Length: 229
Image (tube, rainbow, N blue to C red; front, top):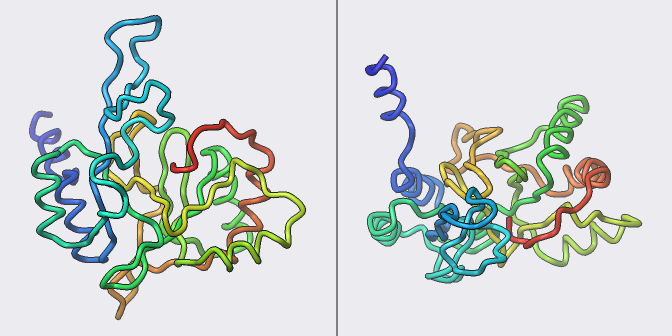
């Protein structure tokens, strides 16, 4: 049994190794996020406390702090230095940010229950989705980069867009696996697929997914909190 557990530990990617892989193979711009710890005192000692020291932080251990988001990079030397110094830091990707490989993926996130329903609906409709991130409370679908004008034109066709559906474009971010956050571990619900002849994972266009995501998000109340994750 000890040998089997040992193999499992060896195959689980360390945050530093995963960060270097995302940065060097796919040119995704990254920076280390905050960390968290659980309260040792108070009415609920299991409540996570973010290292940003904000007692009301809604995304503990899952957002940029120092350095700031604009410092995100795919430079292997910088990424290696960051996670060598801070091995437990979350892996934060700056969505829509420009880089040597082009702009980084953008994302659309929604409550976990709505995300699971949306994936089932995409399967029924035979709509191909790209990588899907999952945590205990929210799921995020990575999509091809878009700009604010494109987003605004698309959303103007809807009478209402639920606030539980959030858009992570240029200036936004998402946490990548294997980040361990106060909202739970981040994992791949759908792993990235790199097609032959391409360097980075295939991504769908936002416009191909929004209608289903709006429908599924509309039945889930917004839990409030930050737009970040």
